[in-house]
Length: 460
Image 1 (cartoon, rainbow, N blue to C red):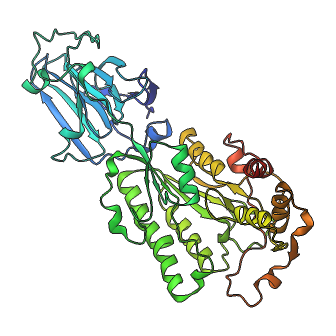
Image 2 (cartoon, one colour):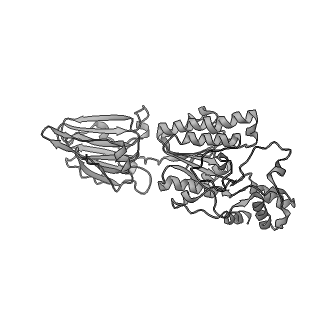
Image 3 (spheres, rainbow, N blue to C red):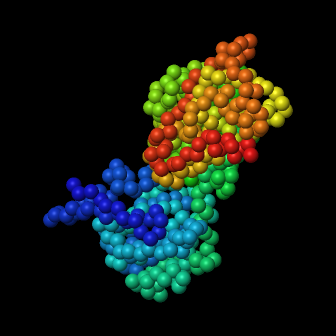
């Protein structure tokens, strides 16, 4: 059986689908919707949940222009229509118009925010559409409507609107100049109060950014008030990160509640609303035996924190539209190793720093930019490792770099082993090698700044 073909239009995201129609002396047959074939060709996997069918008794029935808060896949079962679409989303393509004639051999994918209208060209025309959300009483309040005959649109209706059959509602819609543009869906950032969360807020100024006080993964009920229909992607920068406290009975429960159970609730929300989910993870999912960790390395966490992060990664991977972004040694706006070393250097203190654990720093501005790159570039879903680039260093090497940049001798940093540093302290086990392979994310076209350059800029 021949496959459909998909063609872009002048409206971003509006796609025309040519459908093979197989006819014989009995009539004809077509596959109107075939998920695997169509998504393989580039149609969004929009997850329809409802099918609606409109029978139009006469030629000249004209319906629209409506932009409801859902995606549509529109097609004709019998008869022919003149279709018109207007981009009503805010942005540079606002007001752009596409028109074409449709019969059973053609369908159109209409993204959320694009106004849809049609005029029947034959009596007895049957027009159908799949949608990925159910109608609710507030749907009209969340929709945008435009006047069918607005001269600004320049739609050349085959049957003049003065001779067409229209509803009272469709004759009363405002012109484009007075219509309400559809807001683009925004990213939702969870954990907006942390180092990465603050960097994401700076990188995505229009994001809905929620702190733990506003949305706590350990309390799923705090997620219920979010208007998920207006969210375009979820970025989970929230986590229980108290590595040492996680080894205590209370900390163990708290770590599992946030990093596993809470993440599981988030995955179900992403699945229900078919939202891409970015989940930030950690090098602690590995035991550090390998000198460099690839994305496909099996989990081997040493402590409770690492165990919960590994379990969270596994839960996130059950949703196909996911990015697990593993990172290490994060440096941002807040308390972190680099800030602590800079303070000690400025105060004249000479610290003892571990010299037998190895990795690379990750500056939050580059981590945030990498997350946006994955979302915006259309990179394949899956797991990606992301730190800054450059040579692998020990913690003591980095401390010495900070001291040197602060005008102190490198030798003012004493070097000790992990065993010496941990002696007499209740500390969780940590991986010896935290270095993450960057090859996969670099292959997507993301250029990662060297850690040394970012450190130098931070200390200047």
